[in-house]
Length: 88
Length: 321
Image (tube, rainbow over the protein chains, first blue to last red):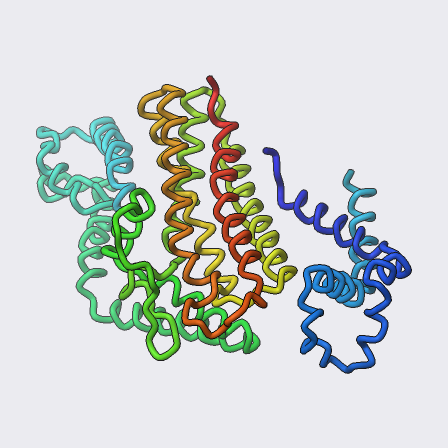
């Protein structure tokens, strides 16, 4: 039960790291090569009946998290590593 | 200040007696009654020098100046300038809060006003809602009232979610957990902070998991995230009753019974509340199951079953057989 706020931040950071490390090839293999065409549609792909599937939503979520968090994740990781080195 | 009165009273009394009796001969000692009558003034509980024999001592002169302070307290409360001062301070504080609120971006302003909706409760609502959480089995109408396509505040409609009960019951849970730990001689003040932090963290985790599940299964429902936070906060009421039943009776059997009853009643309550918001309308606008009705039902069951799990998990470590 000894949860602290730091534990939560650390768990969130590790989860987002795990999402960022997933390889692109693995993801495209999972989605059946259909996602590569979506950026060309220009955002109108949501009208598709198929894009409502759980798998597609999950893959969209993973992709968007990777796109958004790529750069800030570097900063968060560096800061956390510094903290851990200095303060144990 | 008034609470410091008794303490100052007992501290100040030996001093004037000792100093006066040591340096000056006084035929009459100050009567305790005069001291008692001056004790009502508050901080400056000094024997009234006029009730003395009239010896002018430096101490009584000093006390004389502070006696002027005792009348200064009446001066404080009757002073019209003080009211002006209070008004100025109040206006300044209001200006400061308004300025900070206006500095926020527009999104936060909107969410601030929408959070204000959840705190618009009154006493009858709180009592009705608490009775409802503990005994939801009477037949009643569970639909939420709407006023021009906007939900009615909880003051008017008993079925509306609110933040007051979850917030207060979470704080009460932390205190009751401290009480239980104290009875078992396991209490340190850090435990209070740890419990508060774990309440916050488990809430955040639960809301995150539920939001991500809602998003992944692509369910468009009328349930907003703010409503979900409110509905997930009602389990603390159940936790408090289970813990109190353990405190009062100190028997494991009663605790398990209370836990079971709370799980059943909370699940029933949440199913009835959320059914109208997660499951689609029965109006027949969607003739076939493209919206994934089964998914919604599973999601509803997931939400509802998560609560007793949390109740059990968060009270388990406090109970020692």
